Length: 636
Image (cartoon, rainbow, N blue to C red; front, top):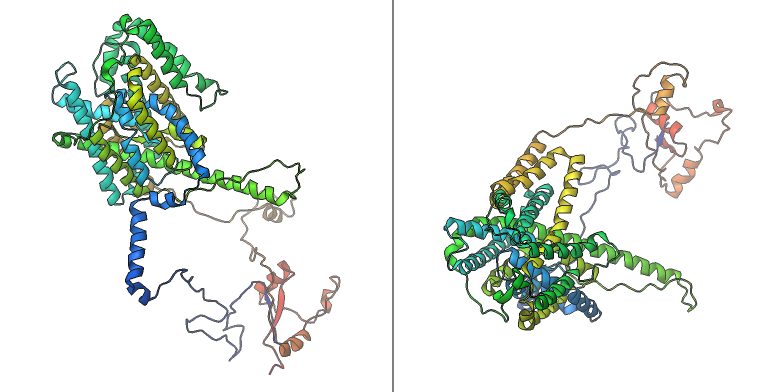
């Protein structure tokens, strides 16, 4: 009789050495021994019979349900809208609209368009985006990076036609090219969405994206010097040409314009350094209202300060199809702007949606703990915790976001709307004011329409330098994030710092379109090099203090130690109970050795064979091992 020591939950024995004839475990039809179990695949929760699939009623209802909700994401959450969400949506819409109006007016001027184009872009495109969007927190509209990219692309086309700002019909041609550019961006968005090209964002790494935005912020600040200081210079598509023009015309600075800009910038930057000022305080709107009143009563225009004046128009424009003659001229620039714009939009949407879900889970956990700990008495000392509002049943879909931005820009170009993108400042404010659904964006649309109908005449005394100051305030956050990213990459990865540097310098030297292409190419090359020359790490056994003491003779003066082979059976699994039928259980118990004291190990008559060192080690290392005697005797 041979005694085996089993320490694992299921062990397949060596049938050649430990078993006699006719004692091997039977094989199943899969070819495995009975000690192994076959894992069956999980059965699908929803199954349909062939008869149900042939049913026309079933097919029609399933087709309508799937097609409508897949084509119109608004149907995924609108039927489940709760009235308790409406209060939060209204408060968020009013708060964000106060910040929205002055920003979009400034971003329209940044793009080289009339100020009212910013409000046009906050009506039709935002409404269309709300129908096809899968994000509940993102606040879309004109943005600083997209505005400066639009201005750069349009200036490049106008320069190619040898037309200057002093020529007749310059503003009309500029607007036509801008609307064609927006229309082309919408077409590219839709094509990429139908191709399900959401994977494209993997080629635009984070250092490239952050570096490009930092480069765009430099271009934005330099382009606003003309309005901030009243310089008499033209617009140029490349950064260093603009810088040379500013330096050469530094003597044309207007004193009153510079003074108004300086005071406005100080007031606008107060919330950046004084944290006690809440985010919901509309500092830009306050600055604009103060300057409108001062300009009206002190007559800033007579002092030589450039004002908005009759450039701004009231009312809503009639739809007009863009001019397709410039479609080939703006296609390359529109493709670059589409990819960059989508990258920033989808990252912003995913980050705020995830933050919303995390906050909801935390509040729900606190509420559940409050329910468990509160005994229901009115005199409970525990602070009352209210139940959080439910989240709308909607998740961000990368491919559907392509279609949402494409449809919004495509039809928005018919109403003199510039290209729209996700705004970080307005999205952050929308999140902090607890907006629940896209209903908040529809309420903002109503406010913008009221501004277009009734507010435009009151904006005519507004100085242009104030709008330029609002733009510079918004760009400050982009520059701060860019420098923080540069410091982080310097500490972490010099290779990604090289990508970041190329993304910053290339658009400043060769233009924004070619610069971003060069940055993307650099990112692809760096990724190829990183995967081609990857580091290979060989794993081995690590020496412990116990092995060192054993090698040094218990710690006594050994003078170095050699590498020890790894000890067998370091893992000690829990003992496995061996099931025995009642007839075998009585016969098995009579072979159980009696527990002997450790001082008399020689009295144990069952000695382990010396050749089975593995099982001997298992017995010594695992005192809870179950001893099995094989083969059993006297068993029928």
